[in-house]
Image 1 (tube, rainbow, N blue to C red):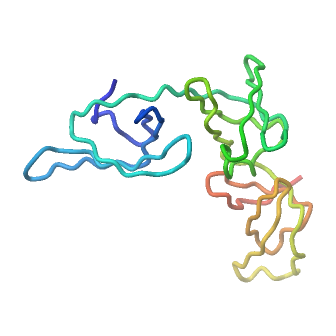
Image 2 (image 1 turned 90 degrees about the vertical axis):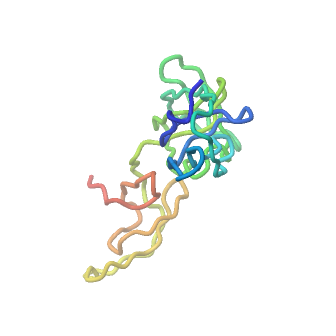
Image 3 (image 1 turned 30 degrees about the vertical axis):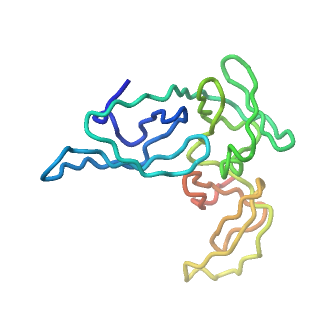
Length: 187
Protein backbone atom coordinates (compact mmCIF):
# COMPACT_ATOMS: atom_id res chain seq x y z
CA UNK A 1 0.00 0.00 0.00
CA UNK A 2 1.00 3.60 -0.60
CA UNK A 3 -0.53 6.96 0.22
CA UNK A 4 -0.88 10.31 -1.52
CA UNK A 5 2.65 11.42 -0.52
CA UNK A 6 4.01 8.70 -2.89
CA UNK A 7 2.25 10.18 -5.94
CA UNK A 8 4.68 11.44 -8.57
CA UNK A 9 4.92 11.37 -12.35
CA UNK A 10 5.08 7.75 -13.54
CA UNK A 11 3.64 6.30 -10.27
CA UNK A 12 1.51 3.24 -11.08
CA UNK A 13 -1.59 2.44 -9.02
CA UNK A 14 -4.66 0.22 -9.12
CA UNK A 15 -8.15 1.68 -9.18
CA UNK A 16 -11.12 -0.70 -9.52
CA UNK A 17 -8.70 -3.47 -10.56
CA UNK A 18 -7.28 -1.44 -13.48
CA UNK A 19 -3.68 -0.12 -13.58
CA UNK A 20 -3.20 3.64 -14.00
CA UNK A 21 -0.01 5.67 -14.42
CA UNK A 22 0.21 9.24 -13.11
CA UNK A 23 0.84 11.65 -16.00
CA UNK A 24 0.69 14.87 -13.95
CA UNK A 25 0.04 15.79 -10.32
CA UNK A 26 -0.36 18.87 -8.14
CA UNK A 27 -0.41 19.16 -4.34
CA UNK A 28 -3.01 21.71 -3.20
CA UNK A 29 -3.27 23.14 0.33
CA UNK A 30 -6.25 25.47 0.52
CA UNK A 31 -6.53 28.14 3.23
CA UNK A 32 -9.40 26.22 4.82
CA UNK A 33 -10.01 22.51 4.80
CA UNK A 34 -7.90 19.46 4.10
CA UNK A 35 -5.01 19.36 1.62
CA UNK A 36 -5.44 17.20 -1.50
CA UNK A 37 -3.60 15.95 -4.57
CA UNK A 38 -5.05 16.65 -8.01
CA UNK A 39 -3.87 14.08 -10.58
CA UNK A 40 -4.17 13.30 -14.28
CA UNK A 41 -3.86 9.56 -14.88
CA UNK A 42 -3.63 7.32 -17.90
CA UNK A 43 -5.41 3.97 -18.00
CA UNK A 44 -2.60 1.55 -18.90
CA UNK A 45 -5.00 -0.90 -20.55
CA UNK A 46 -6.99 1.47 -22.79
CA UNK A 47 -4.86 4.63 -22.90
CA UNK A 48 -7.77 6.80 -21.70
CA UNK A 49 -6.76 9.80 -19.54
CA UNK A 50 -8.81 10.81 -16.48
CA UNK A 51 -8.57 13.49 -13.79
CA UNK A 52 -8.89 12.38 -10.16
CA UNK A 53 -8.52 14.12 -6.80
CA UNK A 54 -7.27 12.33 -3.66
CA UNK A 55 -7.51 13.61 -0.07
CA UNK A 56 -4.17 14.01 1.66
CA UNK A 57 -3.22 10.78 3.47
CA UNK A 58 -5.62 8.60 1.43
CA UNK A 59 -4.37 5.02 0.94
CA UNK A 60 -3.62 3.81 -2.60
CA UNK A 61 -2.95 0.34 -3.98
CA UNK A 62 0.25 0.04 -6.04
CA UNK A 63 -0.12 -1.68 -9.42
CA UNK A 64 1.90 -4.88 -9.77
CA UNK A 65 3.58 -4.12 -13.10
CA UNK A 66 6.80 -5.47 -14.53
CA UNK A 67 8.90 -4.48 -17.53
CA UNK A 68 10.83 -7.05 -19.53
CA UNK A 69 13.20 -6.56 -22.44
CA UNK A 70 11.86 -8.47 -25.43
CA UNK A 71 12.75 -8.75 -29.09
CA UNK A 72 10.19 -8.17 -31.84
CA UNK A 73 10.06 -11.22 -34.12
CA UNK A 74 7.30 -10.98 -36.75
CA UNK A 75 3.68 -10.01 -37.50
CA UNK A 76 1.02 -12.71 -37.27
CA UNK A 77 -2.33 -11.49 -38.63
CA UNK A 78 -3.51 -8.66 -36.33
CA UNK A 79 -0.88 -9.60 -33.71
CA UNK A 80 2.84 -8.97 -33.27
CA UNK A 81 5.03 -11.70 -31.75
CA UNK A 82 7.74 -10.86 -29.18
CA UNK A 83 10.35 -13.08 -27.50
CA UNK A 84 11.72 -12.67 -23.97
CA UNK A 85 15.50 -12.28 -24.37
CA UNK A 86 16.21 -14.25 -21.15
CA UNK A 87 13.68 -17.11 -21.11
CA UNK A 88 12.98 -17.28 -24.90
CA UNK A 89 9.26 -17.35 -24.05
CA UNK A 90 7.06 -15.84 -26.79
CA UNK A 91 3.96 -13.68 -26.45
CA UNK A 92 1.66 -11.75 -28.77
CA UNK A 93 0.30 -8.22 -28.60
CA UNK A 94 -2.44 -6.86 -30.84
CA UNK A 95 -1.92 -3.81 -33.06
CA UNK A 96 -4.55 -2.08 -30.89
CA UNK A 97 -2.46 -2.67 -27.73
CA UNK A 98 0.65 -1.34 -29.48
CA UNK A 99 -1.03 1.78 -30.89
CA UNK A 100 1.40 4.05 -32.77
CA UNK A 101 4.38 1.98 -31.53
CA UNK A 102 3.60 -0.55 -34.28
CA UNK A 103 5.30 1.88 -36.72
CA UNK A 104 8.65 1.56 -34.93
CA UNK A 105 8.95 -2.24 -35.03
CA UNK A 106 11.46 -3.90 -37.34
CA UNK A 107 12.58 -7.55 -37.08
CA UNK A 108 14.97 -7.86 -34.15
CA UNK A 109 14.05 -4.54 -32.48
CA UNK A 110 14.44 -4.74 -28.70
CA UNK A 111 11.59 -3.14 -26.74
CA UNK A 112 10.44 -2.97 -23.11
CA UNK A 113 7.15 -4.84 -22.69
CA UNK A 114 4.97 -3.81 -19.73
CA UNK A 115 3.26 -6.72 -17.98
CA UNK A 116 0.34 -6.48 -15.54
CA UNK A 117 -0.52 -9.69 -13.65
CA UNK A 118 1.62 -11.56 -16.19
CA UNK A 119 -0.36 -10.17 -19.18
CA UNK A 120 1.25 -7.80 -21.67
CA UNK A 121 -0.42 -4.37 -21.74
CA UNK A 122 2.00 -2.17 -23.68
CA UNK A 123 5.37 -1.59 -25.29
CA UNK A 124 8.05 1.09 -25.00
CA UNK A 125 10.18 1.16 -28.17
CA UNK A 126 13.77 2.47 -28.23
CA UNK A 127 13.97 6.28 -28.18
CA UNK A 128 15.35 6.41 -31.73
CA UNK A 129 14.90 4.00 -34.64
CA UNK A 130 16.36 3.99 -38.15
CA UNK A 131 13.83 3.47 -40.93
CA UNK A 132 14.12 3.40 -44.73
CA UNK A 133 12.18 5.90 -46.89
CA UNK A 134 10.04 3.91 -49.36
CA UNK A 135 8.18 6.77 -51.00
CA UNK A 136 8.53 10.56 -51.25
CA UNK A 137 8.45 13.26 -53.90
CA UNK A 138 11.84 14.02 -55.47
CA UNK A 139 13.67 16.99 -53.98
CA UNK A 140 14.93 19.97 -55.93
CA UNK A 141 18.66 20.66 -56.04
CA UNK A 142 19.64 23.93 -54.39
CA UNK A 143 16.28 24.44 -52.65
CA UNK A 144 17.71 24.66 -49.11
CA UNK A 145 17.00 28.30 -48.32
CA UNK A 146 13.76 27.72 -46.46
CA UNK A 147 12.70 25.32 -43.74
CA UNK A 148 10.07 23.60 -45.89
CA UNK A 149 9.21 19.93 -45.63
CA UNK A 150 7.48 17.25 -47.65
CA UNK A 151 5.68 14.04 -46.63
CA UNK A 152 7.53 10.70 -46.76
CA UNK A 153 6.35 7.12 -46.22
CA UNK A 154 8.74 4.84 -44.32
CA UNK A 155 9.16 1.05 -44.53
CA UNK A 156 6.78 0.42 -41.59
CA UNK A 157 4.02 2.61 -43.08
CA UNK A 158 4.78 5.61 -40.85
CA UNK A 159 4.21 9.02 -42.49
CA UNK A 160 6.63 11.81 -41.46
CA UNK A 161 7.49 15.28 -42.72
CA UNK A 162 11.08 15.47 -43.95
CA UNK A 163 13.33 18.15 -45.47
CA UNK A 164 13.31 18.53 -49.26
CA UNK A 165 16.74 16.87 -49.71
CA UNK A 166 15.49 13.45 -48.47
CA UNK A 167 14.90 10.89 -51.24
CA UNK A 168 13.42 7.38 -51.49
CA UNK A 169 16.03 4.86 -50.33
CA UNK A 170 17.50 7.15 -47.64
CA UNK A 171 17.73 5.83 -44.07
CA UNK A 172 16.32 8.25 -41.45
CA UNK A 173 16.63 8.49 -37.67
CA UNK A 174 13.14 8.88 -36.14
CA UNK A 175 12.29 9.97 -32.56
CA UNK A 176 9.70 7.46 -31.28
CA UNK A 177 8.46 9.83 -28.56
CA UNK A 178 7.26 12.40 -31.10
CA UNK A 179 7.17 10.38 -34.34
CA UNK A 180 9.29 13.00 -36.06
CA UNK A 181 12.34 13.13 -38.32
CA UNK A 182 15.68 13.72 -36.54
CA UNK A 183 18.38 13.29 -39.21
CA UNK A 184 19.44 11.40 -42.30
CA UNK A 185 21.73 8.46 -41.48
CA UNK A 186 24.93 8.13 -43.52
CA UNK A 187 26.04 4.82 -44.95
